[in-house]
Image: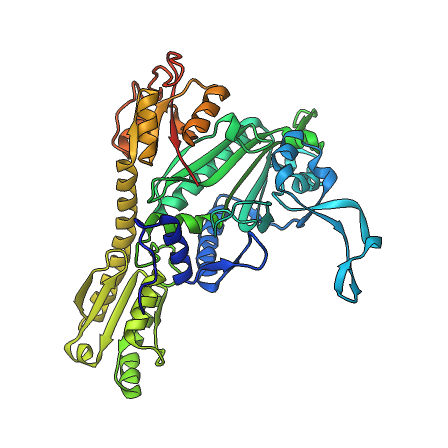
Length: 510
């Protein structure tokens, strides 16, 4: 099977689409801006769901489901929220169609008394429900997560990264105090960071968004920012401290232990199928998709080399104990017994689909008690002895761990190499053209932030957490710039010269 993937250097955008096509992850649907997620792509999303859902439940959260349709009046109750989403909302105005000679049209008699909004996010309808659930401090906290789809009417779309409809999870929690809500916001940010780095092998920077980049209706938005292979940043997840904005908008109060009445404090947080795009652009190569073993739906595939059905049956019987042994070790594996395809076709297919380890074995290998083991990440092969099955299978499990660690290390090194620290605006303009993260000092004003964005197309990705971008990067990126632990490295703003301002993280982004 010939490689039909454009090289990254030739056309990165086309390379991305080619990887998706050849790995059979998704395709455009007849509805402009939306996508069909094919089984291979959905299996990755299911793997993400499985891991994240466990992490959410380990931190005390429960799953629930809320309606897809939201009364238009609900979005009017929180002014900042409705302003943030007004231009992205799909609106349902009628309830039925009627048959005509030419097919169907909208029945004018079915006009709704109140239009319905197709869920762009669920804060409004959830907080309307919470009003009935919460009366006393004994009802708090409420820790709810929802797995759902949402619709945001995007004009410029790209598979997984930005589509009109996408899949996600959205957490919505209610708390008695401000401190509890902030703790929850940061806890879930840490869950996302752990998932990104340990499962996706995708290093991220955690930080808080500027006011102009904040979620509509939030007091603070925290994020994890990743760096793709082409030097653009990807916002991979967000966690929002909503304060009491939605509680006040929907009149959600609780009786305190002292008998008083207080508004509830809120958070929301989410990640979406955009993470699949992040996986593609963090690890994949010109041969196709590369998946970290912790996330790969299929971690090991065994491809038989055979000349006859008799050979195939013998090889499958020989490998059956390996499959059983690997599954007992928690490995997702499969014997590719398809006789209608030649081994070369299977090799190329599994390579394009990112299976971390491929084992090739024929009758001669069986007799010699060896097997050819290929790593997808490095495209390297080695002959491994199979005479001691336990050692062989343990070695494969260890190799999966090695691949996982190597992918993270490689992505982290790339992030380090693509991060620069600058002092002047001219240095900044030059650095941003090379791609990657740029650390620079900013005076904290929206005017300067807007000027930088308009002139360079770069945005402030985040103000890194910990109060000290320098110390955060000393260990993580090997950069200097911190004065004392817990304090930022202050310097003049690169644009205005305002003295003693903090450094932030800039990049061009998806």
